[in-house]
Length: 256
Image (tube, rainbow, N blue to C red; front, side):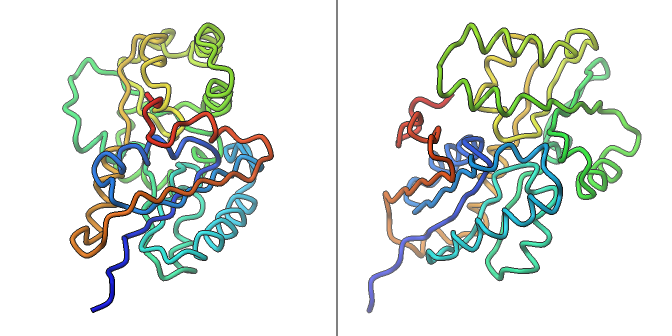
């Protein structure tokens, strides 16, 4: 009998945002073999055209498919919103995407006084998939929706300079609408955002809801973990010359 292959997954994002999901996956299934691409040379996705993002997603998936993968995680809300349907039509491998508030609506117990706002990138907010999701899950428009165009870049910058004072100043400016509108909850519609969740909560006073655990559970539900060998293989790559990945420890211990 031949040696069993370790189960392997590919993950891609425009930067380090996907690490928020990877950290949860690693906590639940550390035996998985992981290949991660951060498309920092083309970031941020949120202000690109739909075609540009779809083309990049196809390119990154072709790169990941050079490995013998069992599944690919589109660890980017924007990429999920505009490209995951086309990826599923192109490749035979299973894909797991990130929907910003599906589980927040179904799993969270809301009070009448709660005011929850979904924060996303611009392209995600305009995507047909996102609009269909809103119409299906929030037909009465109980939630509020806001584009935060600079927040993903703020996260990437923070992991380079580690300047908490600068981060807090930028967050106060970028998220000033939270206090002005008295939002009690922020539903994080970009995988970058959970990486600074505690700073967002401290700055705004709002509670944050993240999809990371739900996405990780979905990934594991599609894999037969009993069929593979344990692996400690992690391969990280960036499309930028000066990548942020070097600021993230291989055991993810320095992630929030």
